[in-house]
Length: 319
Image (cartoon, rainbow, N blue to C red; front, side, top):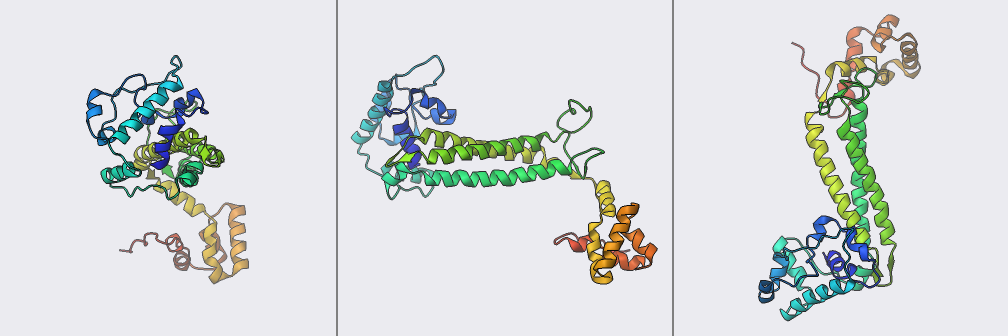
């Protein structure tokens, strides 16, 4: 909050800031900025300072390519608001206390305001946490995309909700559009984190001129991850289904379950079984029975994939 407050009070009327710096701020932030070309509402002049915190002026300024504001307009409005708060007896830290009381959040002033305004390590660390979340979500999206690849040549172990009518080059194919959308959103979040890191480098002494960059990138990161994850959950995960037949087919053809035979047959014999199964195209069970190494019951007892996966459901009881 302290940094956000600084952005609103400094970044948009500082003489060293570019005139179009306000255009870097998302619409959700601009809505909180009063129109500098109009006076405060008459009722606002008579009400206590809580009015400005709870009821910001409804007339707001929207910047477009055809408008140009002078810094004098912005500075006059900033000074007018500051003077209004001072006249109402606002003391240092009181705004933070009001916000903490209204929101129920443990907000507090920075212990060292000069350090807080010159360095934005907390924002950089926060952006890094969002980047870590983006990396994790991208991994989930990539796994879903790979496991749902198909319908015939890929893995095809997952069935995706059929949201699109089909692929542009293959009618009837269900594309992993939601997984790809989330992956792209995560990639952008990682790029924005780099921009935030560079913005954090912009601090010199008690000033950091990259505050608008830090703010817009962090806000966009939050929006991308929130909407991306929610959309992926609602439009993909909720309707995701396994393909039992394809899973059973892949499991039967898998050679990695030969590991379960090593304690019983020894490494060399188990390796020979795996090589023969690979060369002949047969399954491990077929090769073991053909060689007479184990009977069918013992093979099924040793090679039980459910026992090899921690937390897997137990095998069904025989009737």
